[in-house]
Amino acid sequence: MPEHKMVTIGGIRVRAEDEARYRARTGESAGTPAGPLTQAHADPRTQEKQDPDTEDALFDPAEHTVLQVISHLAEADEAETARVLDVEAEGEKRKGLLERREEFLAEARQRAAGGSGGGA
Image 1 (cartoon, one colour):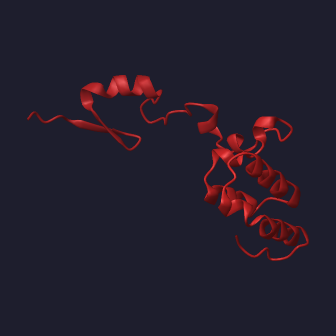
Image 2: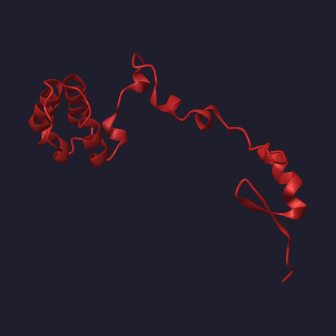
Image 3: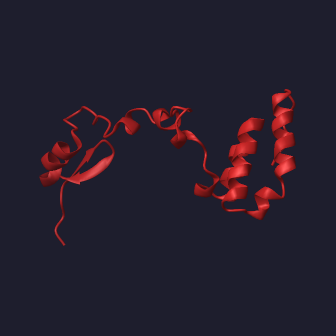
């Protein structure tokens, strides 16, 4: 098997004969790191901060696992908790969430009042 001379570019090993092609593809010139590929790579926080007035920004429990929904509810206020549980009751109707509705709402009220919050 032939041995190839390898070049390391930004922590990636590339064959020497492919170096120019790799740099052209990634936009990385010698000694200069490649720029972000998309706006999300440039600032991943922009994905988290969407306009709360748009319908897309609302948390949809149907798109998440029970554990992800519980995690969201652990940080949500009372109104958001009620909204998410109402959406769940109309859609997926997962028992593990709906049976604990009052518990989730009580924890949200406690967080709003400045309490420690307990745990889900």
